[in-house]
Length: 237
Length: 227
Image 1: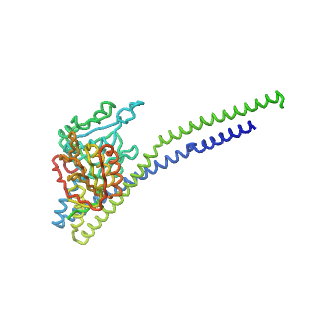
Image 2: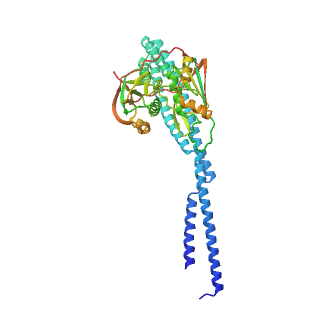
Image 3: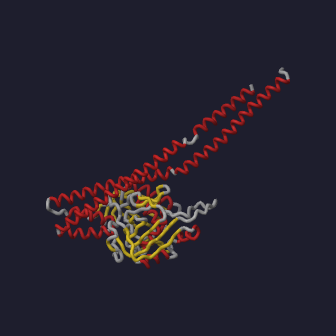
């Protein structure tokens, strides 16, 4: 009887473990690869669609501009509005600009592989880009672009997992190039000011994170590759 | 009463059975632990969350771009219609001018949104993070303590003083944000959650907020049109 009871208990335990084992079995490699591939395919398809939609926006913007130019030629009232419109487009980042300025270069440092340092301080974060852009505006920048993406009134940097996104889900990856058009000495003084970007400068020393800048006599920033939708804000008066 | 030889045989059989079961159990426990570790490593390598978040953002951005295309197509049709009939429709130009003035903070605006009150000092990077989150959630107009904030408005800390566009702003901070309150709410909550450990933050939805302050565009001295 004792042997039977022992065998029964042991068999029960083995069956339980076997069941748990079956449930926790990782996906077979073929399924896992298929799932990875499907996810990557979705991203590629959506990014292709994103590029195509932006190209369509730019074509339509060119058509609208041609219509506006012709309208302004035919009416003096429209001509006045068109002059104001062109000025607002420049302020909003809808036109490409060039001029003297500053190029700021950033890249990840070296992973210390330290068991006590899990800070990821050696990588460039979206907040670093946001801080640099803020300092450049404060130093009198007239136009800014990050990795070819124009910084406009609606621009927000954010993370989607490990990806840094900006302007309609445009993915930014290092090395990062921030171009600012403006007075080169003023811009360089702003970035070089020890009171500004102190944390980034400290990580530059600790992790060898790349952070340098260069004055230039001619830089160019592209126009914003989309447009603005205002749905909720209404003008007063 | 069993004989000693029979008793010995039975004991040996029990020992063999238990040994086999113990081996089996040991094997299964080890395999179990190893397969669980493998599952964890596989998930980490795949970074499904990153890919899923990216897909979500791309879908959202593409929907926005589809809407932008529709607005531009309508604008073009309106302009073209007037031109074809021999006239000139300055209304289409005026409409676009109003939109850009709103975006650039050049005119007073009103609309639904959030009123965020912060009771306590805030550093420049904290305000930048909040503004970034709100813009990402579709904020269309923002003001802080009577100063209009647009994309190029610098926010810096001078010691304990927060400066917005060169003006000192002191607590309590009152931020007005116009946009879709459904979208703005979670973004404001996210910023508040990091601030609330040391300052008091209250967020109220409003059906109609007015932001009357405007921004004077800074003169363009160095930049010239064209690539």
